[in-house]
Structure formats: C-alpha cells, structure tokens
Image 1 (cartoon, rainbow, N blue to C red):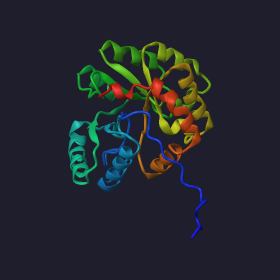
Image 2: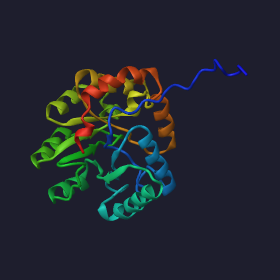
Image 3: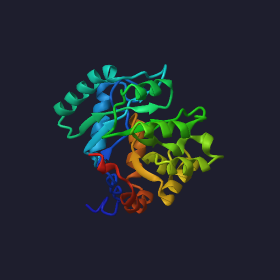
Image 4: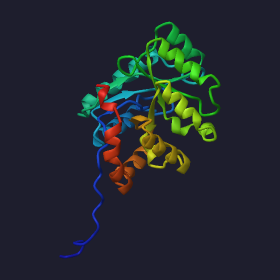
Amino acid sequence: MFFGLFKNKEKEQLKLPYQVDIHSHIIPGVDDGSQDIETSVFLAKKMTDWGITKAIATPHRTDVTFENSPETINKPYEELCKALLDNNINLDLHYSFEYRMDEGFINLKNNGLIRPLHGKFILIENSFVQPLWNLDQFIADIKQKGYFPIWAHPERYTYYFQNKSIYKQIHDMGCQFQVNVLSIAGCYGREVQDIALDFLKKGYLTYLGTDLHHGQHVKAMDEFLRSNTYKKLKPQLEDYILNDQLL
C-alpha cells in the first residue's frame, strides 16, 4: 500500500510571463507552421495551458516562398476561429504577419497595405541566410512611415555573432526586440541562448514570442516551463517584457 508513496512528482509547469503572444505560426496550411486544422487546434490549446489568453498569429510574408496577404489568410483563419469555438478553447485569436524585409514588404509599406500587430506595431524579420546590407535604412524608413518595428528573434541571426555591435545600433534606433522563449531555453544552441540572455541583461528584450510551429516546439516549451532555469528567470522576464500592453 506504500508503493509509490515517495515517488518523485512531476515538476509543476509554470505559466509564461505574459498573456499576449505576438509571434506564432498556428494558422493552418499557409507557411512552414501548422499544416492542418487538427494541429492548429492542438497548438492553440497548448498556448492556453501556458497562460496565453490572446494570440496574434504571424504567418510569414516573404517574396517567392510565402507571398501571404489577407486574401490567403482570411479563410483558414476563420476556419481556425470556428474550430477553437467548437472545441471550447478560450483563445482570443487575431493575425498580422511576420514581414520579411524585402521588395514585397517595401511595396506593401509604401502603399499602406501593412497589417499591424496592434496600433502601428509591426513584426519584421531578416533572412536566416544572409544579412540585410541596409538594415538601418530599412528601420529608418519603417519609422518614417509612422510604424513601430519589432525585430523578430534577432538572437537567431548567426551572421551577426561576429558583429554584435549591430544589436546596439538597431536598438538605439528605436527598434524593439522580440526574443523567442525557446531561444532562452537553449533549443537553438548555446550561442543563441547566450545572446538572448545578454539582451535581457542589457535591457534590449522587450517582447517574448513562442514562434510556435509544431509539436516539437510544444514538447520543448513544456519541458522549459518545468525547469529550474525558467523558475529563476521568470520574475526578471516579468519585469521587462511588454507583451500585455498589446491588448
């Protein structure tokens, strides 16, 4: 009768330090994220388990590969909203885009066709293959149009690892940084993790995002939210991040 009495209990899973997620790929069949409605429902349910009450999904918008627009997103977005309702998943779902800084983005910006995350805030990203030679000019142009740029996962652009001065330059221009939770967890490697934590130390980290794509991300997130590392970092993250101001 005493078997299992002293068995180690599974560690408590803490919530994320915010309720509004501004970076995920849970709209089905539109980019490299979820490919079907069942997966999307599963991902959305997990987000609510982590304490998220509102998610602004951000399908990729890139030239050639994912030339998404409201015309390509509206139908799967509406289908997912209905599926969440049918499955009693209480997630307030909206969408914007993760805008690659390319020619297509320039055209959208110049023609007033940007769909912001909230107000005039927009999520922008680099290519992972090569740096944008005129990144500072891109940022300046975005701000000149009245937008507030949020740089998606700058800690993951490996070509800047030997030129870390770029982070201060872009931050000082008024571009806010969105770091992936899984970067802090070490899921993209030690160097990415170190840079993410350095952003936190220097006060560059303004927003967090799940950047949720698939079940492997869920597994990694579940493990991290049970870790001692996260338990120690959570109060500090709560002091810095501004996700919940984008209500």
